[in-house]
Image (cartoon, rainbow, N blue to C red; front, side):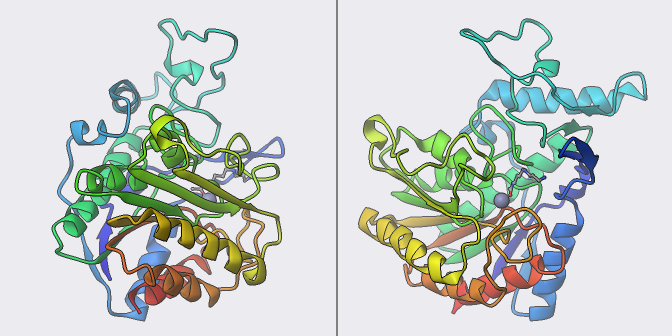
Length: 340
Ligand code: Q9C
Ligand code: ZN
């Protein structure tokens, strides 16, 4: 597989996250990418390359320019501060009430953020731009026919990021960026197989009929991101019918996952897209610390093989997966299945 790396991923190292009222080390750490790369190198047959850096305008195809500027300016402020201000912008207050306004102090108020899992650090913008660059480069390669399948090995992940808000460890939405670029050439299906709902692409393409968004995930009634991912979210306007959520109960194993994946793949087939974007997470693995599903490592090859049956030019993006012992092997299995 042709693998596009985010060369700047380790500029972003989150300080921690809140779990049960305690600050714990963040699950989303640089070692995740290292672990995947090591597993792919050990498996063999993969090539690794770095993308050209993309422009902010290219990111603004999917994200609000004011949000992009917020990330750039906040990161720059933190780097300039030399200890006079905090080393991290960790929002504590989020928009609420009938007509939320942030006045001048937008940074502290969570205007561009929907949870506490997504602080901005001095290196966050550079890392996020590197990930966006990788996703757009992957899309360009697939669009040009230079590769049938490309895998974007990046972190922080992207699939929770919405048009103007970060969340769930995600800043720029790699899958949406790739889909947006490919959609200039033909219909695109986004099939999200991270254990968490792909709210970002759903949000970004909700009113579009030319981009199908499908997500198979843990029931949001009991799993992050809680506020979206329900089966009755089906799109709006021209996009009505072009969003499919397949929520599954906690403890889901291959027996329950298989028919859900088949239904998702059927929806993709019916849509008859020219391209596929595959936000992929290994956090549906049985040993993942936060997912709650029960998929064994070997099953990820079956998932990849089932997706391969679509026969579509594909950009896969790395999303979640937080057990450092199984993340790499899961990705290696999935890519093996995808390549056939
Ligand atoms: N105490 C992705 O997988 N909640 N994001 C974690 C753990 C946030 C997941 C709770 C989960 C975000 C890309
Ligand atoms: Zn996830």
